[in-house]
Amino acid sequence: MITAVLFDFYNTLVDIKTEDWGDDAMRGVAYFLRYRGLHLRRAELRERARDALQRQIDGSSELHFQFNLALMWRNVIEESSPDLVASLGPEGLVPFSQSLATIQRSQSRVQFELVNGAIETLEALAEHYRLGVVSDGQGAFVRAELRELGISRYFDVVVVAGDLGYRKPDPRLFRHAIEQLETDPTGSVYVGTDPERDARASDAIGMHPVLVGYRSVPEELVGVPVRPVRELSHVPDAVASVVARLRTQATYKSVAKPASPQDVVERTSHA
Image (cartoon, rainbow, N blue to C red):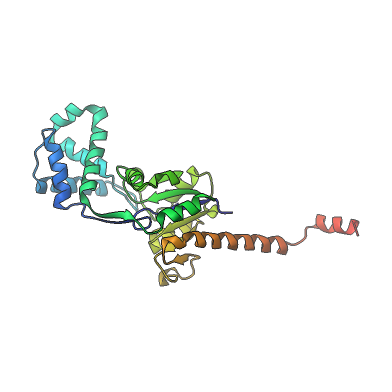
């Protein structure tokens, strides 16, 4: 039976548009670094950051690699200013790098708001199921953004690809969340907007996918038991239909189950 509903975050629960490498984002980081004695122009800072990011990508053997933005900034600091590294110390470098990632993010956002019906959807589902988030985002800001939007209280688990080094459709991302919820794939629904990375990937490990933003099953998912819904607010009904289908299947199996020899003996003895 269904005990958990997990969500993609970006473009599923929140409408977002960013300019991650734009002038505003780089300016914010550059100005912050000046207070710590590191003076880099925006163009140079951008180039160093992209070089550090590319080295992460080149150094990974993951098929579906996900970079770590805070680690990228840590590498930039280590290569650009040994004095700053020394002043921060081993315990200060990590949170400082996370702050740089957060600043870049905060200055890059062009649009950021909950999808219509998000609160009502989460309220309805939280009454009956444990909820979770499985996101391809970054640990430096996903959880903070959930708090900012006022919806972190609904989720028992938040799994972020940037913390693990791999992203969807890697099945480990989904399993990591499912294990923390102490359930199993067949008892879980996954809600997302991407046919391949959300719907097909979750179905591949036995979860029940719900695809938001579609009137019907996309052509590439024909044969996959995915439930398309036009709007996020329709998700509770889709989950209810999954539950109903599973109950029907369980009832059918119970009725259709062949009688065991022991059952036959018992019925005969009571005839």
